[in-house]
Amino acid sequence: MNLSLAESLWQADADLAAACLRHPFVRGLADGSLPLPRYRDYVAQDAFFLRAFADAYRRAAAAARDAEGQALYDELRAGVEAELVLHRSMAQRHGIDLATVVPSDATLAYTEFLTATAATRPEASTAAALLPCLRLYAFLGAALLPTLVPGSPYADWVTTYADAGFAALWQRLAARLPIAAANDRVGADELAALHRRAMHLEHRFFSAAWGGAAPGRPAVALSIAGSDPSGGAGVQADLKTFHRFGVYGQAVVTLLTAQNTRGVQGVFLQSPEVVRAQLDSVLDDLGAAATKIGALGSPSLVAEVAAAVRQRHLANVVLDPVLVSKHGHALADAPTAAALRRELLPLVLLVTPNRFEAEQLTGLAVRDRDSAWAAGQRLCAEGAQAAVIKDVPGLGGDLLVTRDGVREFVLPRVATRHRHGTGCSFSAAIAARLAVGDSLPLAVGVAADFLVRALASAPGLGDTGPINHWA
Image 1: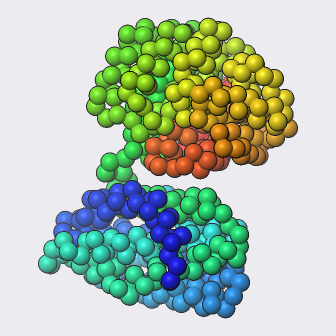
Image 2 (image 1 turned 180 degrees about the vertical axis):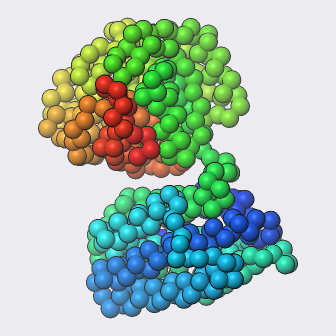
Image 3 (image 1 turned 120 degrees about the vertical axis):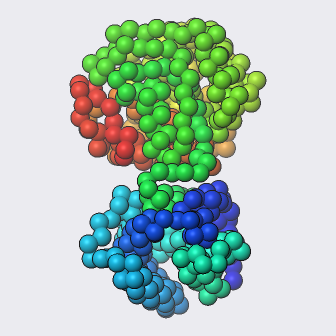
């Protein structure tokens, strides 16, 4: 069997598999410490989930282009139906009425993801979304079996998924994946994104069963930016975005503002000494897997932050310049822009200027895709490893420029005045995804998708209000 494609997806998401294994819900299955009410809730939610899982197999069978693929998905769906029979028996034993189960947010997120993928994408995409559940459970069963405590009330769960017959299921689906990918001409980036999304949802499923928290060791990200007391932009928006993506957020405040949804009434810079003290404090303790830098406000603050980035060897640094608003209004003076270009650009993985900021940083007029590409190349030549030029005229989206090429992210235009904090949230979302191990193109794509949904579902607060950070 050719498992190379599936193996590469699994290895890329090994961090999430390890997070599931050390989750207290999962550990409690082997040592028997899991409270029975938690297990009862899990069984009820899993029964709901499995119905959607079986339906995704049905849709994959319909999408398969050959009889061999159709037969495989029909067999796998039959196995899920048999598992549902076991769940009904288990539910009866524990006094669970499956007919009255109300799916949790985590369950709905997973089932809706599977249903949407299977209904709108080809077989290969559905297979990539289905595979993590099978392989993860086989992995967990095998890893827990040596530690299974005799008498654990959940021993059947461990032995079922540790069984070689169950492992054979994921191996068959894994062998099918490269065949389906070749038939459907689905790229590796899409398969990787779907696989990782499913792995995230598996971890969220266990967390919801445990009680809604996300115990373990989440990735840590850092925001270095200004404070928005209205909560829509700055470090407040960054922390909300980090939390949305399951990342633990820290924040170093560079400046205080008096602002609301109607405008900015005052800006109060912090001293370089105060900013550096904050940086040293958090970096001496938890560190940061990724860092987002926002408003700095003065050349001296730029210099202090740049020194910290260099001396601390910070990785995955995303710079949101905060020089000019999306409407062309100046947010920082020329010396600050010059300091950013001179001192910070050579230190960052990604810079995310809107088209006006790209013009100020490069001196090139950004009027269309080609001029945006040229500006991105100029930013890379000045030291940044990559640049996203936002709101490119005529493109209807953003342009990711790296030293190796260019990629477009064409996005639907959302007609809303509630756009406060979009730049902050976009760059923070990229940093969050980099912190959990995404490639740069994947992180940018996920962040762009998040921003569209966040704009489309903005809560409508105030005048020019915030986006929806729950999107």
